[in-house]
Image (cartoon, rainbow, N blue to C red; front, side, top):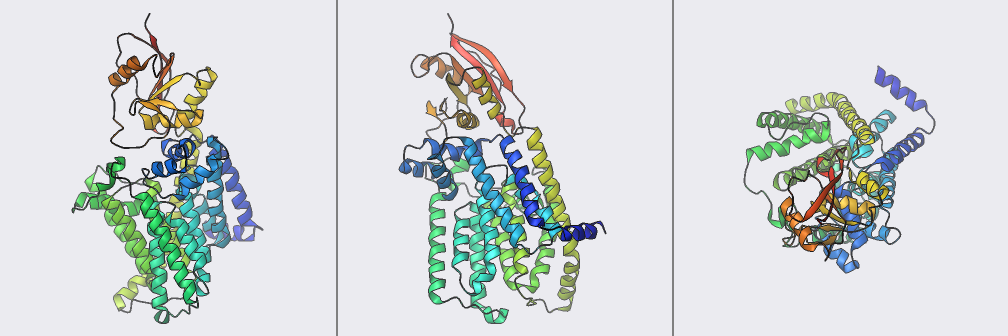
Length: 509
């Protein structure tokens, strides 16, 4: 009853979508200005800022394991300003564009639009945290909005798919699955009861354009042989592992429900939530069974992400949240198609009817869980800095130390400070000044004693006193000949690895 009252009230509001978008934009702007970017956000920005030229930029991006589009946009943005805030505001614009497309063109009732837009991915993970996932979200929603135009032309859809393919690895997989579904619809259009009139040259040009985009994405994502990021190019799990399978399958539950996530360290939890995941997947498959094209995409998209999760990278909510986006896109595209039942058997037909009665309640539950996750994530980011790096940068500026010699370790934990200060830091891991971090064999891990030994050796040569040492763990060793004075600690941070300890180092007299 409460849901019906909310739906009726929202339906009577004039310009509801516009006011909702404006409200989310205001909250997003507040959250963006408050958000302290962490290392994964700033590394791409620093590559664009400090690469010598485009050739150097290209070489550096190859080690990131991501497509080119986001990094290329950051490189262009860096030609205008080195201010890190520009990246955050640009990302906010992309995220708000995706929400605008969803609010304007999605066929969901207003109350579902409200709950979805305030959910974990669109309101927190893909709004406040400046990564390439907002690009994929925008491309996916644009594809769904333009889907009815496939009857006359595929070119707009090909552009959306190419855009997705060069956004991130998960959007690439989803785009390929959507392309396969489009191809299947063209081949079986008579049995499916659709009439597609795109001319041959339109289809050919669309295929070539998308294929070229996929090829570019794969070329950029395949890391050079000397990369050590996530184990390098060879770190794939190809053997059968029941424990790993449970981890992968549980991501369906994690991606849909998001607020009740099982621990990967408890096999029993993984087994239980893997079963829950299979139940969810079965219910939605039965629900989509009247729409063969949607069922094909749902299976392909979910299957591709799960295979990647098992074989390569278990990921975080921003990654396996792509399973939720596959579900949303499937539910959206279903509204454009006429039913064409596949299940004729009496038992299966009853199961399908049962799923059709259950899905509205299940979908509401999923949306509400996502809403809780979004509100909690957004509120936590307002109260607890994501990273303490901005606080460190502000402290150094306030103390007049921003031009002092800075030594930071671990390098990738200290890189956000280099972004905030718009300067380079000496990294003991590479024995050189740097900002972004490239994971190759040339980069060597160092312990605290080795860090102090480097400072002792380089003091007066590469490093001019006084030296400010930035660590993400307390200093527990000393070095003969060096005077070490603790300056400050910054432990108020959501990312524990980006809590910092500052020390001033000079020669002992």
